[in-house]
Length: 192
Image (cartoon, rainbow, N blue to C red; front, side, top):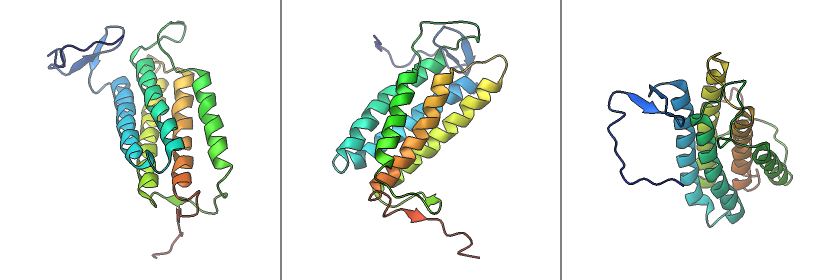
């Protein structure tokens, strides 16, 4: 159980912050950038929920669960595990990844296939979901870069989860655009 009595601790005044295992790292460390960007994505999903709460209650329920999952992802990232180490720390599970895939398939079944790339926009809900999607993609790029460092490790399920989440947010944005009928399609070279 998390209990926060005091919001400021002054321990980060020197430009470092603590990971879940107690190690101190620079606030610009890739691991901090990764879970900080996940936090940013979570806030963007919270903003998207302002538009889905009444108009798309089914989407909103999924987004509420995802917000909780993103805290699990942050916990996963703040407790680095070595490649040889098995830990009991909170980790994203394959079950969470599978659930995202089922939700993608369910929502996408009612949407016409794309004939062009989609410009981010349309309804307010779709626009907010597109913004959240792009932040999730940035988090994924940071996580992949972190995982490429031989001294770092990012769990495979959390990498998969973030990749699927951006796909789900894309499908949700299309769903919120009248099941794709109100998507704004890219017209290559239209303004040449």
